[in-house]
Length: 321
Image 1 (cartoon, rainbow, N blue to C red):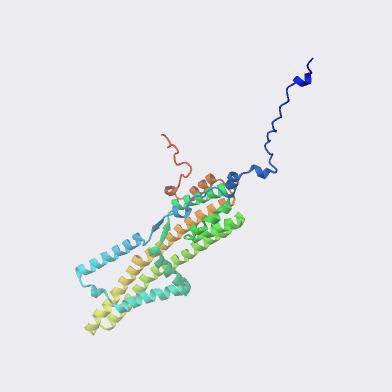
Image 2 (image 1 turned 90 degrees about the horizontal axis):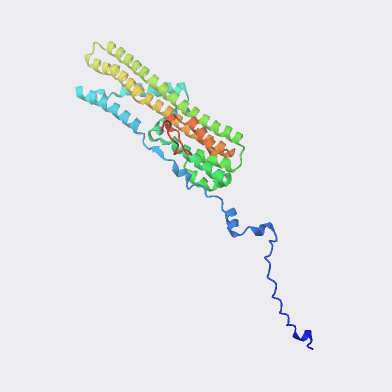
């Protein structure tokens, strides 16, 4: 009889157990380099938002064309009926120019008059920012801050140095200044800007009122000189020229030069105030982490009707379509 132990098959060696997947030791191990890279690199911000704004102007064409056209009309009228040299009289110029400057300075101060003339010269080369471009730039910054946090705006500060007010506003955001404090600071700066330009415009308007008056004073001086020298025919001509040319110089200086410059300074103040108000609204909204769509509504509430934007609803259907 055969022993069962002799015929039983030899048991096969068990295969080594499969290595079970190692459980992650910590929750941090679940985040692999790809996720880590996503965490380290924030969402890309809009490229160069400062370049989305275009400067309008350079030399103010309207001012230069208007003044040049007025001067050309006057010169043509003079030369068509006589000599241009007949309208050049140094005593008359001294009375009108010197008297206007002196009386205007007496009405204000030397510093105010100096600033007014500086601003009057600046409007001839005034660079105006397009309000629509400014509003789009603010919305680009708001979207960047909403996607990656206000801290990401630090990377954009070098691109915003061309507009100092915007650079300061974004700097305040990145420094974590409270929105209410930021709004008071920026609004105060805008009010100071408008007040400074308003005073300069007031100086120029006062000068435009004084110039014709000084022309009238010169006319009276010339008439007195003429009447006092009726017995000397050679003195009547110069005295009459003084009497008439001072009125001419005063009218031209006040109505052709100074009054338009005053209006230009006021217009430049309004344009700058609008741009800085848009920047203020945007900075405060970003600091409060508001929705950019709400920011668009706030900007459109300030923009003139013809300058309003549709940043998020570019393809919105027209009414009645």
